[in-house]
Length: 173
Image (cartoon, rainbow, N blue to C red; front, side, top):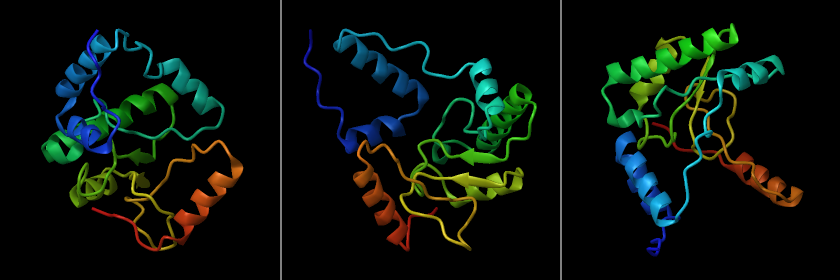
């Protein structure tokens, strides 16, 4: 068995993410091979699971079809990815899909201002990035920040929430 090089650091993650879908697949397969493990085949939700979430009252939003980094593809392909994702989800749920989440979502790295304008043009009501922060009245509805609430302890979640609420500026494309 080969030693697995440290892949958890942010720089390596960013390099892998920037290489495109096919490169990411090859790197993931190599990591699995070296770790003597298999990549799960059920990472994506099925249509039935999406329908069940929608039926339970969850809002379903689009995210593209093949998860490209929008900043790396032509705008026409970005449009196709966004429109097709939305259309597929609307067929599955039988309801309008009003929200969009940028793949990876880092402003000025994973998407640009023209992608936010495209989300608006396509008729989405809003779009979320992965910029850390808390949205305020008057902020751009097509670059809403968010943060990961994965803290297990209530006090840590409270601190993260307070920290993000105090941030008056967050990254935008």
